Length: 182
Image (cartoon, rainbow, N blue to C red; front, top):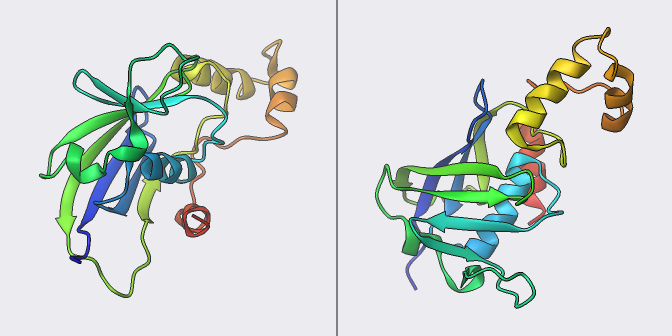
């Protein structure tokens, strides 16, 4: 059986300024269900909400009759069925309420390095926004609130966060520790 190619993806949280992103190397034959778990760990989400992948007019996710969503089963579709050439892209949405949209851009197609365990994060920037903070716009409102000690909700928001929050914090080592547990 042929070894899977390695896809180098740049995953960018849409609407984030400065951009919040991760550069990942993943096996091209991962299913979208596997990619979902990789993205959750790489970005820092907690997998507490529904999600979907969007490629043009086709939606992939976890089909369930109670959801009322028309989507293909993500466990039956492989990444290399969606993208194959550098500059190909599609989207991943996490939490339909907050609507965290991520652009997945294929930067390079590589041969697997036998000394590397995949998936792996090479680089990134920015902390993952807190769950349930209201999407990108709510996130920036939250940052404004916690950075202004005179804001009437400053202390409440710090308590809700569980303490200080650094929007610039990112550790490739921590991301790779989370990815290694897959």
